[in-house]
Length: 111
Length: 365
Image 1 (tube, each protein chain N blue to C red):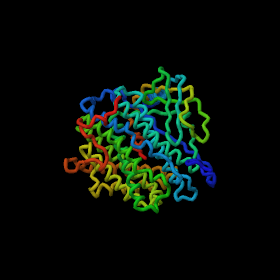
Image 2 (image 1 turned 90 degrees about the horizontal axis):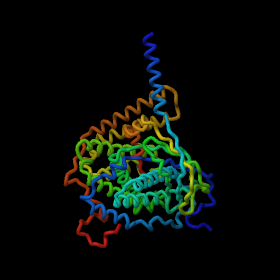
Image 3 (image 1 turned 60 degrees about the horizontal axis):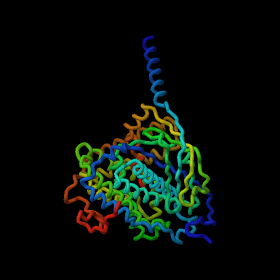
């Protein structure tokens, strides 16, 4: 009986940790997307409003997709878009900060 | 009539879509900003003026050779994959350097990262357009997907990006030299652009070498272990990736293994310009281990389509075997850098002439 109780406690603790890890705070704002996709240059930048700051573990979503035929622009285009920032929990942020070495293949890929 | 660089209307290939999956990084920008560089400010200013000189401003111009019909080119699919991977890598570099520009305050550093972002964006654009020639449209849904921001310590970014730029240089120049000597392997004109192109990569690497030299702590003590780790990580990743794509290199007339070993030797040699140790590439055990990793990896690739427990167990066993081989390679005694074996610089490539250089070389802020 004691063992079962311990197992249930362990499960509850695991579930609580999992919930904490996945907890997100979502905020939205108006941003400007700058996109240039042509022979001379290819880049994409998002100017976020001042109250949105990206930290490790966060995810960012741009809500408006530009109407660009074949994915190519003529010069740089700027367009306003709502952006949604999913702020990671403290637990996820610290895990991302301290475990990046396992994602090192992202850094060492080269042309 | 087609203008240079427009789609070839006669293509018999269906329109494909390329989905780029660039990497998004954050780092401790405040720590990067706090790096003490004033004692080498003149050298940083010199390299900034080199970047602002923009040697390749007019290099990435297309000509009529790009208008040819590439429908029947050999290894067309692998070539498109090569373009996609290269474009993603260049684009990711462009984003990383642009993030640095956004967050750093030091005007010299900001200017340098801005120039490097310019170069990477230009390379990505050239590759992107070449994909367009092959009837590959860019799928921009990447904009709408949730972009995950990975964190790397600044020193990891310095080691990895330095090596990534230098190995990028070595890869491009080795392909260029090979195709000059063996024009039969020239399956697409883009390779003719590689000589000047790779000088951008080399120059970016020079900046990171300077940045690391300005912070001696990054090149000594426990960090030497990180240096060995990154040297091995960069070289072994390339070795395994290229082994999987041996058909592509065969079409260029290259034996992937010889090619990779030349690239690793050159990158290792160049890295002695700044690193206190390099990989023991002349130790026969070094390539014995890497070749064993390739054999294990090829079995894993063959099992990729299977998800039964037996296949999963076999894949796990082989992945562990690769890990052990890499650990054994890491433990091989490294080669210490001495004055006799240190890389002296690329012939004909501008080197810092010292603080007494002519004034006209200096570019104002």
